[in-house]
Length: 212
Length: 206
Image 1 (cartoon, rainbow over the protein chains, first blue to last red):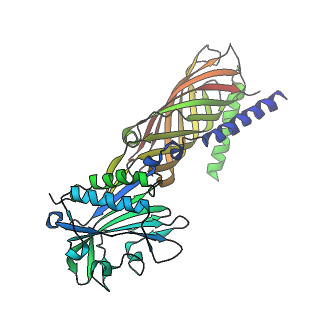
Image 2: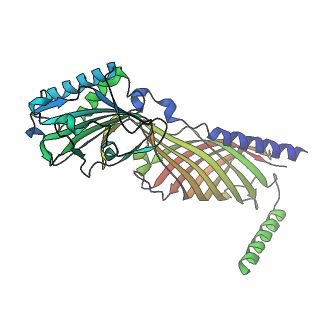
């Protein structure tokens, strides 16, 4: 009887400990929204960023959702803030903002992506079609985007924001080459109050992106 | 076949040995310990925080006054959060707060040798555990996780003491220091090295 009791209590202790093991420290519970975000930047290592002088930025933000392959354009408070913040950062790096009719050297495209409910490979080529910023906007009707091979695919299943810089100075035929790209992922990337710090972080980790 | 016969002979020998030895306490025991572990070597580069989240538990069978064999398991959770930094990657530069975690669940067979007789006030001993460990690697980039789970060979030499609560008491206080080594290679980790301190109790079962 005593032995059974002993074995029983030992077994209970083991069970208690095994369940205790699931009480590992959970990184997601020890994380602020700011800490949850990652900023990925990528660039064309052959591009000479001092060779560009002027840039122009889109007048609204393309919003990609799962619901359709085509993007709709939006100009919410968030989008206005994003346009202003990226413009300011580009100017700080020595580039001059001009109207797109004035033949800028660099084109800045802004895109919000909402893939919250599925896994779609984030392949820049995927949105090269209909809905994404049409190269026609930049004076290349019927043209396309050229993504050099260094752009690799990230899997996404959440809200993101992408900033893409294209070379308008040296088009490849009717294709525009991406020279810099920033992608924001994580909690709060669609929150207006976070825009400035996210833009600053993305530029800070891309020291090469400068006219000076 | 011959191998099986040899094993049977070994076991028979063990039981005989146990039967002839003077018994101070019953041969079967259970031990439960709280564990603290400090990473060493390349594991320290991955996560250098001491882990206070761990335990170890086992069963032991005394073959005679000196030798025992057993089986044990446990758990240890390593965790470290690094401030935001930019990590150059083949896919570009990634700015992230990294949370580096590793959960280890060992399953080992043990052989122990006691340096004094079971009637002593303090029983120092040495143990070697050999077996496997489940390594659950989770490195968070912000809220995005990079995962890997694998089983690795794990060897753990240990020295410790058992202090019976009174002469011939079936309950003993246990304290030990264990070194764990696994030839575990994944990303930043080139091998798994920890030194682990355990305190707990050991019951001999009637």
